[in-house]
Image (cartoon, rainbow, N blue to C red; front, side, top):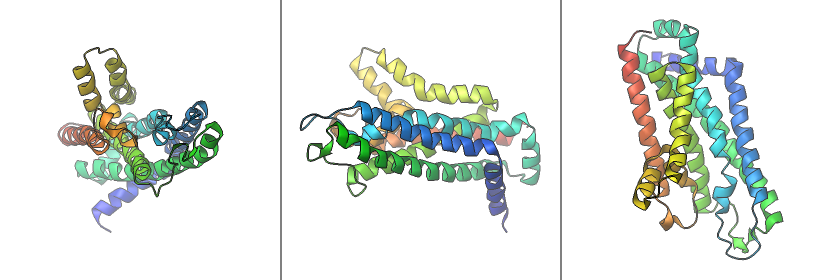
Length: 261
């Protein structure tokens, strides 16, 4: 077995044998589906053309579902620093970039799996809840089917969004190393820019902030209607989040290589 494969297997063993990650992944799925269902239940479409993006509505649970993903990713790195397990890990695998890459691969796969289940669960629940509030195919919205291109893109993009949030959090944790500070930094990056943007009155600056903020830009991928009115396109927005994630991971890798544990 190659060193790279052994490293990935070791990280997978850590993830599945520690109770914390399993609970955080379950919380991610539960919160995402439950919040999406609650938002869908609070909406109504009493007439044709009510103008509500139903796909974005039911997938809105990711706004909170991303928080346990961020915590999980941070603990995957900072948890080893707090217990000094990082020294054992780096002794077994001297290549520090390989360790971080293995963590990113394993974590990304786990988040993608649970994110897919959460998205599918949200669509199933939406199929039950939305018709009770006036959302019927041909009456205000076209329905929610993965056979529909925009809905498929919104669903797959939501899963990709959660994976990128995990990579962003992993990179931040490698930079900061302290659990509390890392979690605060990641949640601040995600949730503070939209709050600040709402206080900006200049329309051009408001739009630019929405285009650059990781959460605002990344979640544009969920939109299925009125795309021309978005501050940034769906895939371009996801690309902005990918740039944030790549930057954090590369910075974390560089610092992990050159400083003591």
